[in-house]
Length: 293
Image 1 (spheres, helix red, strand yellow):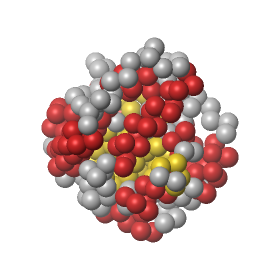
Image 2: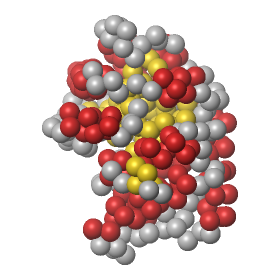
Image 3: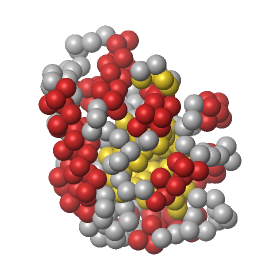
């Protein structure tokens, strides 16, 4: 493990940029960027989204002074930026710590949750990520109802896979997302916190990161932020606008952002480089300030 990267993630000021839209969410991300579905062939889609991500990463506004880490999709990890592997470019040129999304999407809802689909290639993927200088991973499941059994199953799966990832020397970001539109949101968060706490106590000296939906109750996750087995707690915007996500985040001490759509809000393929950089700079600065808690 890169100790300099570890120190930046644990102690640095800033946030994580989530640049990990997968094949299923890429058309929506491109549409928000001004590239409508139907204007490109299927085999062009990943080229277009890589060009968008490259434009973000290469921007003067995007650097380790405010962005601690970036979560990449596998396709991005396997591509290059200015002749360097994407993860290497992030760290060598931007001092931004690279992470990799490893989940393969979601199962259908059962007991109020959507578990992760099996990840049969996980061992090979983790080995490849390590070889490319990736620091950690991220994997997402979704909780929609306050069903204790369902929430328990989602957490069991997250921690089981997390332990496998830890065994390779990578740091897992566990992401049991709570649907922000669930009528049970506050109750889910209470069950979730207790379930995470009980499982953290079984990790011995290992440390994980947590990516959680912005909570209903301010400082709901303070015990997780302070837990010795938690390296950092990051928050997803989950469908809130950037302004609302920033406002909610700023009230939660110790949480930092890991925003995706909220980060890229306002960016457009037709903007000049100056307009693009100015828009991205405003976005990054607002999220950076909100992440100070």
